[in-house]
Length: 453
Image (cartoon, rainbow, N blue to C red; front, side):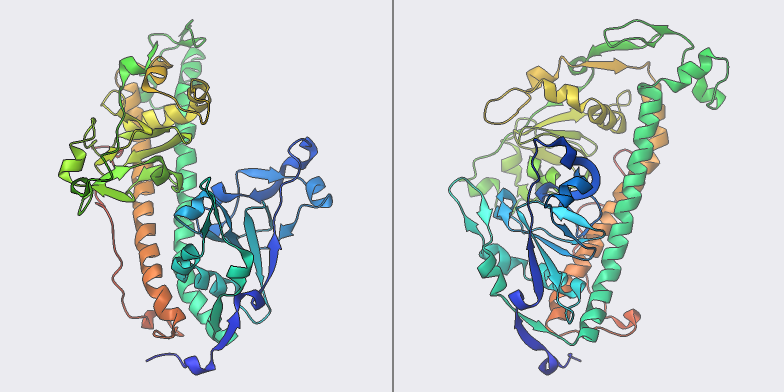
């Protein structure tokens, strides 16, 4: 049974909300920066529910003109290179500020904020087709074009019912993301304790081991000098290239359809990592055929390979949860029992500033394999890194499951969006009345590449 769409009112998008433009407080005034107020830019728009940002501003910046938008504002990217492929849309979970590349929509009293955000999500194809492309690669969504879009508004109660159905899926996605952040923090804390602060060594030296006996026995009770400072006795410092097999990739000719048409092999570019909010790669935007993989020098890398973008920009990181080929914008690190993926990932995260300091390039930073391989790595004795992987492996396994569940939920949401927003599918009073929709589940939901065997 369809909704009674005759009761839905046509309206211009301009009349559905108050439109707010963002801005950038002066970078020269340090009193404006490193405060507690999230300041959102394109790089933060990786999830529909937005709770925080990389950059923050102060109350002083707000007092001097920076604009704040309230919780449940809709943020829309209207300028930037991202618009060449996507139009990010977010809902704020708290009060935030935004930069000049974004617009904030504050819905009118008779418009439900979540309904309007879902309507924008459902109309991404129209938004993308409206993007103007400048010669230097920057996309632009003109405000008059956006505001002229027509929306059919159900009564407010029906808007809320539709938003509640879709919101229940996004609530679970948001919960998975929060859980993943917590699990990542726990894994980083273990790495920091064992391989940076050397807590077990200090505890052994003091005669008060804090780990179970079998773990405490892996660590010495004394230190020795090294190029990296004092390190545990028996540990070594070696160039990362002597310990880890580091390879790059390539791009088969895009003019040859034999390499691309009907391809089934994942082929990653740094852009595939740019939108990840957990360091697990489960799919890629483009796929290669067998012939295409044959044109990539490193071939198809095994599941569990650690990928680090080496340019545009340097430093995106992920563990591949699928076999994957990579383009020339990566340094791919092949894990071993002695150097497992979880150890390599955390080592890269902890040493990222050192890695970036070795990058060259005039137009944009790039680190070559030649520059990466000499970077000194602290190498523990056999067994230490593998025991670390046994401890944090279940954390990354849970992260991987959460990522895949969120992909399934997002696919279900996207399948429901057009049906609910067109009135084809009425929003039920009881969500259990909702008919099943088969989402597209991508990839292999098997064991995590960093889980213990």
